[in-house]
Amino acid sequence: MKILIVSQFFYPERFLLNDLVVKLIEQGHEVLVLTGQPNYPDGSIFNGYSNYTKWKDDYKGAVILRVPVFPRGKGRAWELVLNYASFVISSILFGVPRVLFKKFDVIFSWGTSPILQAIPSLLIKLFKRKKTYLWVQDLWPETLSSLNMIRSSFLISLVGLVVRFIYMFTDYILIQSPGFERSVIKYGGKSNKIHWLPNWSMAPIKVQESSLNRPSFDKDVFNILFAGNLGKAQSLQTILDAAAILSETSNLKIHLLGEGSEKAWAEKVCNDKKIHNINFLAGCPTEEVPYYFSNCQALLVTLIEDEHISLVIPSKVQTYLAAGRPIIAAVNGQANKILKASEAGLVSPAEDPVALAKNIKKLISYPDNKLEEMAENGKRYYQNHFHQKIVINKLIKLFEDGLS
Image (cartoon, rainbow, N blue to C red; front, side, top):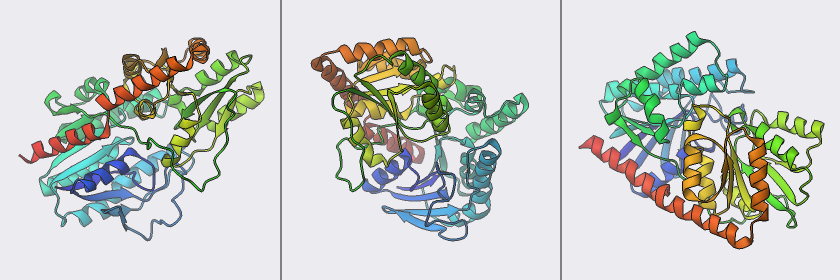
């Protein structure tokens, strides 16, 4: 099968889509990727890439066609608007003409924010008459309002009209969480077009050899790791407040691994309030994550209390389950349900630092065999519900259905 993938983000940016492309090629499919110049999350175009050169690339057997984009800079609202719009416009001007004479069987869009990146795929569909697939990772326009990225009700309504257009003309809408279905239907998606396709773990299971200078961990304390984006949706305030409550718990260290818009703020709060049981670690390549997992006794996930954010299943949930470590969570909605069903750890409501602190203290008190039982529960749940092979086979079946 020949597959065209349209995505604003792709390798060397770190997204699950990279892994999907590799697995599709390993199964004998041909993949063509239309994408932008890499600039996430750094904000500037990566070394070795340019808006003026390297418009064609390859990645492990996939042909990559790149278009120029306005880099996201420091992630301010106006910079993001230009970043999102530039990909759509560049794809239409410089990308679509380059793929019209290519042969492919299906058109697949990676629907992380911004969902606007699906627009070029619909234009290609108009010319090529091929089925389109959109894997929705974030709910628009709800995410924009939940994270206060847009406060104008008029602009939210305008974005809603664009989303409605995308959903109405997309043939297959794949959702990363069952909770997305209601929103997709609200904005024009038909229930018979919607299919649940969950994410899988992005990180390898085993620790790899590395030449990088890895940090060391104190083996005499209970190490808890939060890994991933340190942004508004992750409710870092909850972690900081819980850590402050546990300031007298001497055998505890909470590590925040990653980068994001709230990291500098969180570091300042810890310095100002003298919260010493939190340690900030620089973001690392995905293949390095298992090293950090292996040196920590539990993994932490938090989200803000928001009706729309609660519908999301953060990708770190699958990654944590696969890692085989007990999980501490302060989340609502879909993630809450999954973690409770997996019996892989302790779960409290979103934005409740008192309950989170209580669960952390409880987990520290558990004997090793209890922690090992939680870890095994998580791995088993992942294998049965989110394993990569299960998800990709389902996706390929949907592709085949569109061709029949």
